[in-house]
Image (tube, rainbow over all chains, first blue to last red; front, side, top):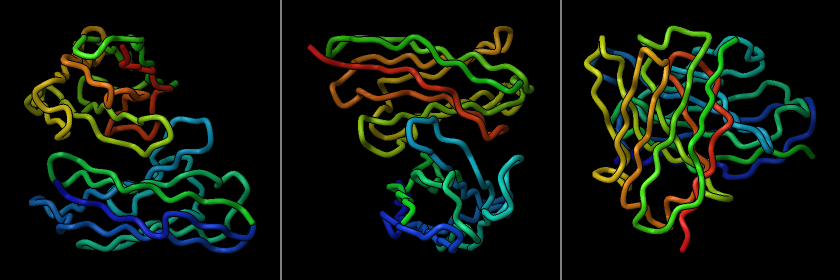
Length: 112
Length: 116
């Protein structure tokens, strides 16, 4: 199985400051169709997860533009340009290129 | 409104079986690839499996810990995806979510507890 490694596992950020989460895969996530199936999910406290980003950098509808995804191959990043209070929660990357799909361990974002 | 509603969770003894359901609404279920994902208490997300749309072959894939014990199926006439869980183990205790590749929203989850 492809191993997804996130860092850091915990992040404390001041309101209005940027945040960055790294996700690395044990194999390239480029699929045979040329797409890279790397998603980011947010799980707020006490809530179900929701997808924020798909195919590395495509934002889902309703997701604020302060969230952005980037990367290629085996190295990916989720950035929040200016952290707001509602961004508190756990963030997961997930690869959908290889079977079975696999998640990263999660990164807990807290506000200072 | 786009919605996924899971049901069927409960308490079951080790070695037992349970079938979960997820009813979808508000999007084109027929063409959607559907997933099951679980979250053990206090832990991260674990992908359980996926079923493709019948137009894409209707095939299934499973995570390593559940392969051979769990089966995903779908009934497009009912906009429903199922997760049949057999030979349940204590480590299968989790909240089980369904999701779709076509929408960002997940269901609220259903709780499965495996305990003697």
